[in-house]
Structure formats: C-alpha cells, structure tokens
Image (tube, rainbow, N blue to C red; front, side, top):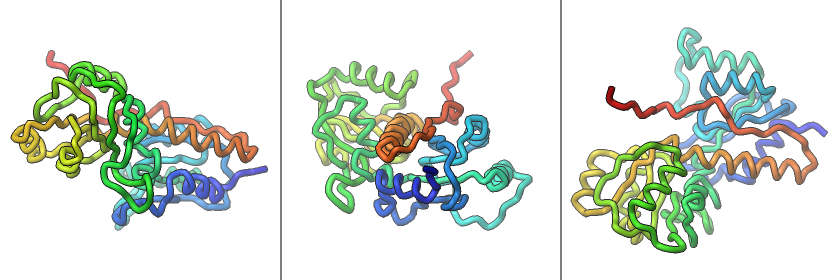
Length: 269
C-alpha cells in the first residue's frame, strides 16, 4: 500500500491540527501534489539548501518543516538568488514540502510542552490558553522538586546543548515554577510573571523586555530560537512514525542531521 502526500497531510493535521495555527501563519502543503507517492520524510526546523541536499541523498521526497517554506506572498521567483534556486530545485525534484508551524506550537503536547517535559516540568498547562482544552501558546509547570537557580541553568544548557545563554533580571536562588515559549516569545514575558513563574524561558528577547525584567527583578532566559524549538522535531518524527506503523505503513521518517543553528557562539581570540 502506497502512502500519498495527501494522506500524510491528513496524518500531520491530526497530530498538529492546522486550525490551531495563528491567523498570520502559513501552514500545510507548500509545494508538490497531494497525489504524489511518499518515499520518505525528512523533518527539519527550516527548509535550507543543506536540508534539501540531505533529503535527496536520503531518498526522502517529502520535507516536513516547522517554519513555513513560504511565509510572505511571493512577488518574484528569481533563480539568481539562493532562495529562488532552492525553490527551483524543490519544484524540479518534485519535492513535497509540508509546514506545521504555530499549529505545532499550539497543539496538545506541542513545542513548548515537549521542552518543558525535557526540563522535568510536571502539571504543565498552556501559558496562554488556546482555542480548545489543553491547547495554546507556551507552557507553564513546576519541577517535581525545587532546584537551585544555577543547577536549573546547568540542566537547561544541557537540554538546549548550549555553552551559555543571555539572562535578563536576576537568576532566582531557587527555581520551581517555570514558564516557556519555544521560539520568539518576548511579548509573553509579563504573562509569565503574572502566572507566578520563577523564570521565563523563550528566545529573541527584545531590549525593552530585558530592561523591564531587570527593573522588576524577574528572570528571563533567552535560549535562542533554534535551540528552544529543535528538541520538538524528535517528538514530531516519533508521533508520525507511530501513526504510520499503526496503519501498516513502513516508511522512513527521519530528523535532519544536516541542519545547524544559524547562530553560533564565537569566543574571543
């Protein structure tokens, strides 16, 4: 039995319901045909030239990305640009691209919830409730046992695989209640504080938000966009693989090994 891209789209929609996506977002099938037979699926945060090359080398004709391949309406498709050449290769190679962005962020057990689980948070619930029960933006929960601030920071750096992180405000002496929004979540810092969090973990924290945190002695940790979202791709691969197995489908669904954090730490020479 062959699996079509349309059927795969239905499976992804069941796991990360597209109706949960924010109104400004673009989710679902970006390129390709619903009738295309799926030979393999490569999951990545972003569709990039290294990811496209990896998909071809691994025999995957479907790329499942978190961030939409097409976000803003295209006014031009110029093949003398890197983006244009990549789109040309995708179309030429009949590559199906499916993107699940804020639909995965807002789903039950989505991006932030998975990161919270990895950090040891229990009794997790959405930071900002969504359209239905247990859905919404971000997550907030408690550690089973309180940790010293620096001990929690060490755990965080291990989970995010980072050498260090920017911190605004004061790192608490003791951490128990933690709020998280994977990816860009600077705008939800006040909600995290109002919800009683000891600290807030997100990314792309704006300067004025950092100043507010310092003035209010509230700890905000900027874990980076890529590091705070990347762990959830493992979960998405697992869920899709389990669903396909239950349907009797034997299909390669793998997480990208080629993509890298576009921001790298550099030390003073």
